[in-house]
Length: 262
Image (cartoon, rainbow, N blue to C red):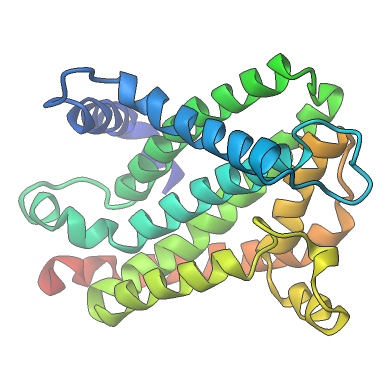
């Protein structure tokens, strides 16, 4: 699969650029909206939670905008996960006509989705870093921990997304169910609330949520400006390996039948 991706790298990159340009082709302000939307989100979270509601976090009473930093760190990284998984879930159905008419490695489609989501994430994340720099809360060297965390998140999402996307071609209920699960999953992950705010019994159940330690690690980097503990991420690493093997195995086993089912 890696060899096929490299051989078709030109097709993948041109598809990503075409998708990005196509998103704003009919708008007067064009790519400005790719900046305006995430900027609006950061401003709203900062004003509403940081100023109007005066929300704060235990142990961070002296940190200005503490809750806004915490909230944005979770929302932005969850947004990458949600966008990737949501699109991977329907990627083969969405490009059904292209698959029927053209002969290219089907694994290029998840790669296009991943790169497109990364571009959107890069724009939003750059604005978030500018926001941290302006308020004087730059995370410093802890920012380097972002690399392994992002790599782990991308691989986990890819494995799960390719498995669900392939399954969705044969069982269309998977697409609908994934959308519902994602909504519950968001609210079951400490993003708009904190883990210590939950009852002790519920906190124990959070160990079953693989996204909880990952989002907590991001929040620690940006709020505490310290390197996160990687030990709690071990279950997610194991799940990532399982889903990568499961997704690749299922995709390779059924890729020949995709055209007949579309």
